[in-house]
Length: 86
Image (tube, rainbow, N blue to C red; front, side):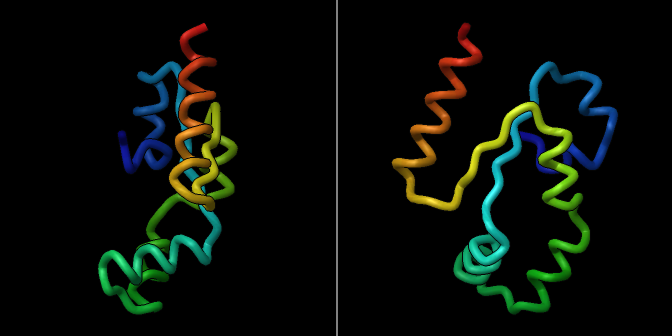
C-alpha cells in the first residue's frame, strides 16, 4: 500500500502491477467527514493535494470500485487475486 504511488514516477518503475481503489467523490467526502470529522473545506484541501482520480485511473493496471458494501469490495478483490494467480 503506497498512498503516493501515482505521485512519484519512481514508485511506478519498481512495481509490476498497480491497483487503484476508487470511489465516487460523494463517498470520499462522506467517509472523510465521518472518519475524521473533517469540514468540507478540509476535505477539499486534502483532495487538492492528491493526484486526480482520472490520472490515477490512467496509471493503474486495474481499478477496484469501492462505492458499494464490503461484499462487493471483497468480490472485486477476489477476482483480481485470481487473475494475478494465473
